[in-house]
Length: 190
Image (tube, rainbow, N blue to C red; front, top):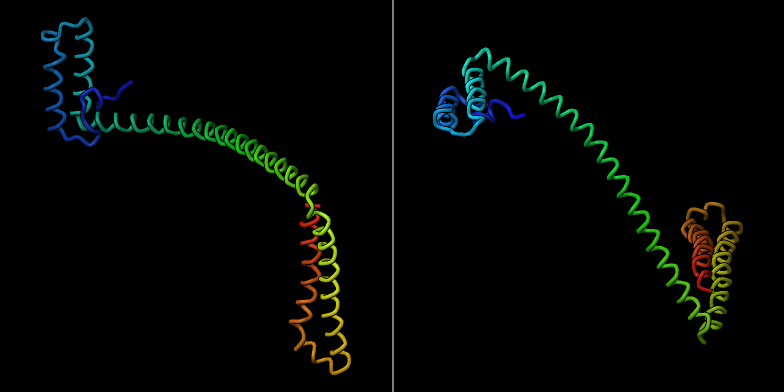
């Protein structure tokens, strides 16, 4: 149902002058003597009611309050339903995104398996496999050697050398830790 403002074709902030002007214009179009349609009398009565309500300050005040409260109720209902539909659309979107990511991950894994199979059947597989273990042993030995040299220097010279050698100690520990990590990631190719 349209409001009285819509019937007259004016804004809610319209002045009395604007309301009178709009009423005269619409009355010329909807008056039963001029308009031959069968519902012209009803439309004109509605226009007259809208005009009488909006031109009187007291009636307009009560109408605006009523219109505003019903608008707020409709807005609250709309917001409640909008939140529900937004949530359901968001859940549907999340589901689609998860399915898409799972499908892409499956494709990447299948491609990885094909590449690994091709690598295993190539002539480079065994030399790289041996190089992997050589690098693993070398890195662990290097990290342990750095730690052993630092420990020896601290023990033989003085305990305060720990502050001077702390970057080397941290580097040795980090080297040992990173060796295990890169070995685990490289092992999946073999």
